[in-house]
Image 1 (tube, one colour):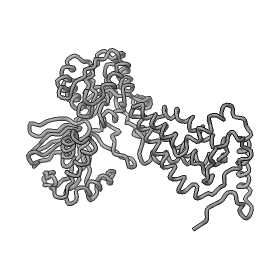
Image 2 (cartoon, helix red, strand yellow; image 1 turned 45 degrees about the vertical axis):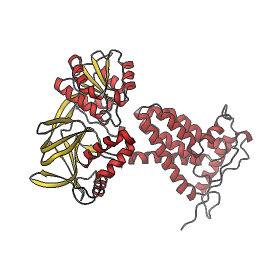
Image 3 (cartoon, helix red, strand yellow; image 1 turned 120 degrees about the vertical axis):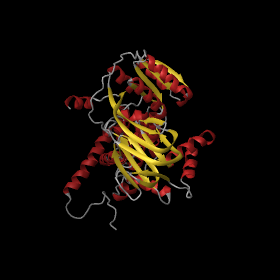
Image 4 (cartoon, helix red, strand yellow; image 1 turned 180 degrees about the vertical axis):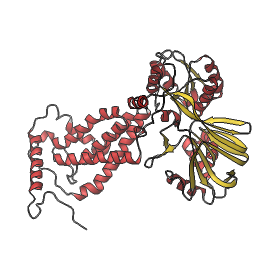
Length: 505
């Protein structure tokens, strides 16, 4: 094992470049110590101490997340994840690899020195790494919040030289490592901006400058009434109708008779009901996310009232595919996913227990119940052959995955059903986990995947559960899935780059 490197110990032989760099580093430190920094003395030492153990950044993340926008929450989470990776790398590799002594405090005025001097090695700066990692992580997810956090991060990094605990090169190296950690996190869990939508023809829809003609039906049980109220701040002419879940379908039908644009605020199940009404009445749909997951709205690029109101005012909309299913007299649509097998059973069990013990405990209990060892897989006839299946997943559009993140759609109008099948057999939990890990691949011993326009299953037993967009129903006998290309028109904010590509395509 090679010994650690100590930058303060001269190495044998001539190392002119190394000596010149160390001399320059020391001189820059002395210049910073001698320089008078107006108004810095009451601020930078306190700021430096507040960043100990990441306290400043955890508090900043809490403040960013408190804005209650999805992008801000993701930015805060990404910042903390980046900081954690940077701290792990610095403490396990960085400071153990280069054992550099701290600078001498003689040239640093006493009023600027920290009361408690750090005892770890100097290179690289952990504070600078954490600051850069957090700020870069936040900026990768939300440039606006990144611009807010960046001055704080720069001040923390500068404070380490100002208080005399680091050489400038320590800070530069730490900041570089921190930024690399943030990009490494993005490689594992991509930002939403990395999923660039393809160029598609824009749909012709009315541009409602003040929202007059928009009727927004709100599922009041989803706790999203404040988002609908915020939308009226941007579109004062819009009509908002709040109702309980039992009245959603009736209110949507009433709204469709007087609306130029049908709006909906709620979770994916509520959005599914609104889409069905919009299709029947040939109306464009405006979706405001108001549920827990909001897959469809987020894949459209609508994260809140500001995004939706901008699209409505400018008349920006696209046509998207709709998945349809039918089994005997049971018919319906799905905008996100449809599934058979263990997942619908898990959803039903979770809904059964959630009112008594809460959502997360109910989900764990449902998973344990559904994945018990003595159960039997679903059996269905596919392509003339009866197959045991633990789960069949059908996505409305192809789901892509980068890194370890769950799949997302980049194209809501590719005309395909994304079919994933987990084969039946022993140990369902292990097979489902293996299929999830092998998600990017078309085939594995546990699962198979294909993109098709139409799929037919037969031989389903009576009472077979089917889940679609968070709703559960019963099917039996034959089940047909079909993709209906570009059937639904939805408002969607269009970026400048997307508009440019559309105009040239």
